[in-house]
Structures are given as structure tokens and as C-alpha cells.
Image (tube, rainbow, N blue to C red; front, side, top):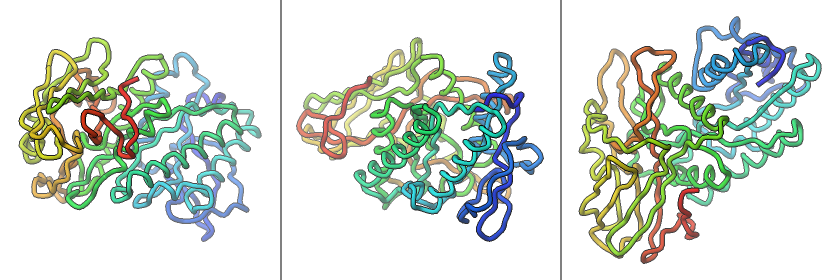
Length: 389
């Protein structure tokens, strides 16, 4: 966020790639920036946007809409140095996207000083994709923490701010059968370890290509939920419904840390157009050796799961390894589907979409995958899985 911009949505103008191309608001993609050519200004994004939208733009737009009355001189910066199809470590210093990112940040800092603007960077908003779906838990967790350490250290050194973390949790693309998706649990643990928030999960959003990519209207609504999370965080209210998991023999009790007044809701028809609730048996809970039953308390926040075997070694929620590509819904030239990571359970609190009248924004329960050692619940690295904060 930047003070002194009179309610504008802005971007970093004037950058060029090594090949001489002008860098648009959606960034240089997979091209290296020419770091001998400085940016020219932090300026209004509208003339350069070309009708594009997306998650970050929507989140920043929501922020401006809800804060402009309190601070009409505040603007919001949109800056993208990422590109799809890469593992997270490509955002480290010394990697192409990482070097682009930090050059862009340094140019923001320089121009803010030149233009007498005050930069505020309260959090990293990180919508992590599916590219790391085959990485081990240790590698994925290590890369997440390395990237966030560098980002937090840079912003603390440059602007004196320690960034919070707001993340979108990775869902499973439509054909996850061979993919472990340990990165999904690595995200859960990394965000929780840093006191951050999981704003939403990819798994609850419609996909437009039988993989994991969303259409523009869905991307905008994801941005709305991210800012809803940010609004609650800024007000000091809780957001992420972290799981507390206890085991006694064949009985596992999962308690989700819901907000005051919330309960669990079973949206039994949520997957009707995408294979039906049968694609999320036992409300999306799975265990080594199978599950006898999963019984949610829909007036509360708990689910009691009875395992087939008291000696089960692992336990998952909304992290199925299944191929759901056959359940796409034809719609013109595209086929709409949903993530293979599924549950019909949701927190009850909703909000109307700002940008799409008639659409409802839902909060989501985070996916998780833990290990059992007897009645002890462990993370995937064998350390204790802590209860909700």
C-alpha cells in the first residue's frame, strides 16, 4: 500500500526485459529484467491494464474500496514477478523470477522516495500453485520457508516492517492419482508456524481447464476472499479454522477452530455438477486401512471419525488422490471442473461478492495430512502436530 496516491490502483511503469520488451502490469513472466534500465514511475494501472484482472488486482481493489473513506490519499500497488509452472524455489535470489522480484521491489523503494510516497507492506499475499505437487514434504517446506525468509528480511531491512503471511492453500488438480501433494501440508505447517492465515483453498473454486486454472470471474472472487481475510486480520479477529486432532484407539476427533458464532455446514450438493458428493466419501476424510464412519456435529465444530484399524499410520482431509477429469461440465469451448481434493464441509459464515451480484463467498476448511504413531498425531516430518493456536 502507498500513501499519497489519491485512491489509485498503481503499478511499476517503465521496466524492460533483456529483450527490450516493455513490462506490463502482469509482469515479465519468464523473461529476465534488464536491471540497467530503471523504472520510470509508480503510476495509474488503468491505461496499461487492457481489461485484465486477477486475484491480486481484485484483492487490492477490495482493499481500496473499504479503506478509501478512512484514508482517501492511499493507493494500492499491483506488481507481478511470477509465472506459472514453476516450483517455489524459483522465487529465491539468484533465480530468474527471484531476481526480477527483488529488482522490482528495489525500484518501488527508490521511486517511492523520489515521488515522496510512503510504502506500507503489511503482509505477503501468496497464492501458491500446484507446480510443487511431486516434491517431498521436506523440500516443499524448506523452499516455502527460504522464500518467505528472504521476502520478510528484505522488507524489514528496507521498510522496517515484519510481514505477515496470507496464503491460498494448494488444491489437487483434476488428475492427482500419482501426485502426493505434500506441498499442501507444507503450506499448512509453514503458515501456521509463522502465525499467518490460510485465506482460502484452491480446492473450493471452479477450474476452467481440467487442471487447476480458474476463469477470470473465479480469480476475482478469490481475490475478494483474500481481502476478506486481510480485513479480519487487520481488525485482530481470527480467520483460519485450524484443525485440532486427537486419537484414542480407532476414534479420531477433529475440531476446527471456527469463528465465534460459526458452525460446520454440509453443502451436500456442492459437487453435483462435478461427480457428486460420492467423490468426497466420509466428508473427505481418509485413513490408512480405511474409515468406518465420519460424523460431523453440524451444530458445532467437530467431526468424529472411526477408523477401520486402530493402528492406522496416516490420516488425511480433503487431500484425495483421485482422477476426477471425467466429471467436467461442458460450457462452450471450456470444460469446468473442480479440484480432486474435496469435502462438502464448510464453515457457515459467508459474504456476498462485491463484483458479482448473486454470488456468495465461502470460507474454507484447510486440507491436512498427518501421521499416527499409536495415539500420537505427527506432522509429515515426524514432529508433533500441534493443536490450533
